[in-house]
Length: 229
Image (cartoon, rainbow, N blue to C red; front, side, top):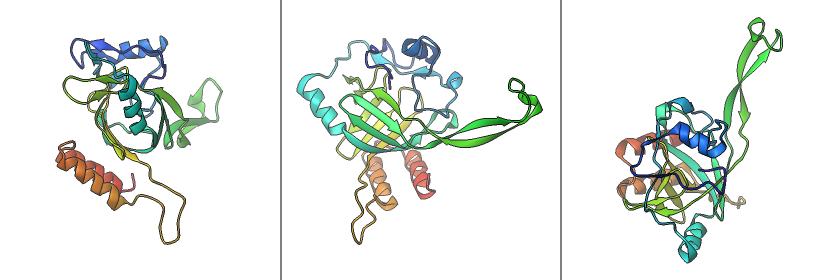
């Protein structure tokens, strides 16, 4: 997703032929990774970005409003597949209009102690978990001839958009995730107020039955849910 609402689509003649370095340059001009949601990824190994095929028509007017309306609200992020066995750092998403805010989750950072300020060799270092800062990104919807909908300037594709889930093939090769509707409500007597693991697994099974998840992807997502990922 782009962090700049005015970023033009990364148009291409063929998907996955644009290097990540070009996307980073487009977004900031300073080497800042546009995919700030991937705090645990190593950008130098991310490979190619899909991009948006030339001739793809933007979704506008009432169709755009209807699609954004269906996507609006709170979501839980369920990673299905990530490149290079990397981890996805964020857990929550909120969509309002064309604005996407991702938040929640933790990432590791290195803390140094002892020694000189500029020379950590005399001291020690250790990893600590810190809360992620919320990130604001922007949606940019185009029709995709091969199916699905481009949802950002760099070619992330929503293969399904419904009231309770959004299935996304990320703009980077090997990136897949689900946005599952966050149905958490104020707790009522006799109920937990949260979607159970069994219900989430049922939804994953429905996606597999529809051909949107492979058996391996379903098994991996199920294992993460059961393991409290």
